[in-house]
Image (cartoon, rainbow, N blue to C red; front, side, top):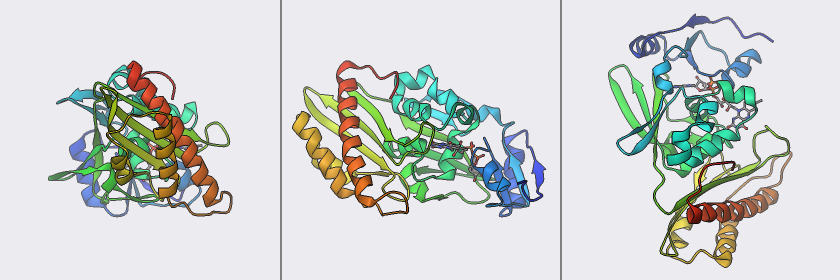
Length: 295
Ligand SMILES: Cc1cc2nc3c(=O)[nH]c(=O)nc-3n(C[C@H](O)[C@H](O)[C@H](O)COP(=O)(O)OP(=O)(O)OC[C@H]3O[C@@H](n4cnc5c(N)ncnc54)[C@H](O)[C@@H]3O)c2cc1C
């Protein structure tokens, strides 16, 4: 199918883009990589009077270190994240998550900003943003605000962005000494969206676990951090019994629902297995300081 007719706009500056958004909102949609919006328009699951193509705003595709944090422009492609030496060194979880998104062609076009605004329940990049407590910068004409990923992602395919706003950049903390991170996911076919995905970051100092962050996607409408649970397991010696206990507690704390294809109990079991695997891998990386490579 072809999309319903729309007016096409391709601004060449941020100022022009924001002026157009103010003028055309709410009947305007931003086009980034088009990997989610394109199919939705083509299948007529979405329609719009105006399409605002932001692909000429290439300065918002940079990945750089700013004030001790990693700043990623919203237009950075999944492929660029997956292959960034800067990310592998300073924010390896984000690179690992990008490596596993869809297929090669999708990673060439899809953008970090598009994935976050799309807010798919099991999007790996949203999972990374939630787990790492990333900060999103949203701009509109005359205003700018920062929102934490956990507040930005409200529910499945629903975020805090306003129709006249653009997501401009996302800031992630740099990995600290003694930290390790890992992503584990399960899907039935290579390139499919995951059924459940888990991201973990751990910090080990003098043999004790001093910080734990656990993000889970696929058991709630959007990825969530299990902060209360994580706190109860900090300040321990992270051995095999500890990993098993965290994994069991995580499985007990998520609240998946049955759907037509997958039962809630299966998602819960997957959570337990993937949390255990993610923790083992993250601890291994924390010990060896080897963060780069495959997830
Ligand atoms: C076959 C297939 C398999 C896939 N598999 C996976 C997978 O395994 N994991 C995964 O996470 N994703 C997967 N995806 C989705 C893919 O990651 C998309 O790239 C991503 O969801 C959207 O990014 P995009 O840049 O293409 O955004 P677009 O499709 O252009 O836009 C998506 C939404 O975001 C809005 N938007 C985009 N950028 C901005 C911005 N800067 N400011 C404001 N609004 C903006 C758009 O208006 C639209 O509502 C898959 C897609 C396909 C087609």
